[in-house]
Image (cartoon, rainbow, N blue to C red; front, top):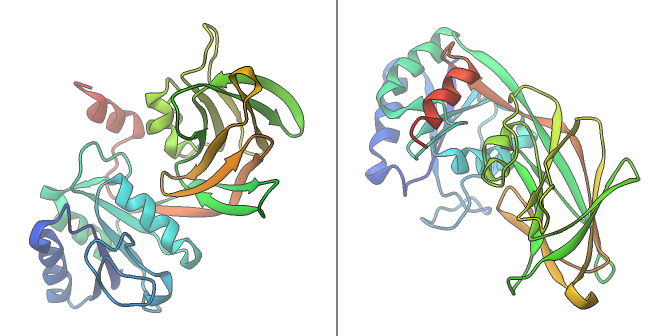
Length: 290
């Protein structure tokens, strides 16, 4: 690889110390490298603007996007750049870092591997969801980790009806429903009691959040299935409001009677893997002591 693009979460990389180290190392080896920090959609820059990059500003011919931060930074960068189909490598400056494989101490060795072409490309499944609302028009978006439908406001349960390929599956009285990819199975879904799924699998995991029952379990579906979540009423058939949230970032308001249709997206996020360490070994390492 010869042309790199760096996306940095400067809240985690104070004074851009690691960013500058990588930039200087790559350019000293004759590689092209562009750095972006909190780029706004109009192409200007502002620390804390809430966006990491605009895909249209990535130089043509870029072969790799280096993402410095944590898994959240990498997920947002993946969503922002998905239309460019450029592989990403995560450099972990956060905590667990399941997606951001490279730790700070190993960044230069990782750059050597990239420049030498010594890496594996892992295409990760994404979800495509559309919120269909009675009072407003449909809103669609993508998710690398998960799409979550949960209540708004008061701490009370709501009824959620789940359909798979148009067939009724179950009704949950719960705080919400998580629909995750295999990549997202180690995130919010895991915290809600969901299973861990190998990231290269093609599956959809449906997990209720705090269901009001003793027997509720996650359901693992084929990646080819279509999941529909219809928002029911609250206790005493009260009108309820909720949100459909994509990767914890984009939230779409919903209300009783609205529903979300979720399916596997044709788009994928390509993650670069440097080490030959298996997913199970990474899992053992990251989960140790947690």
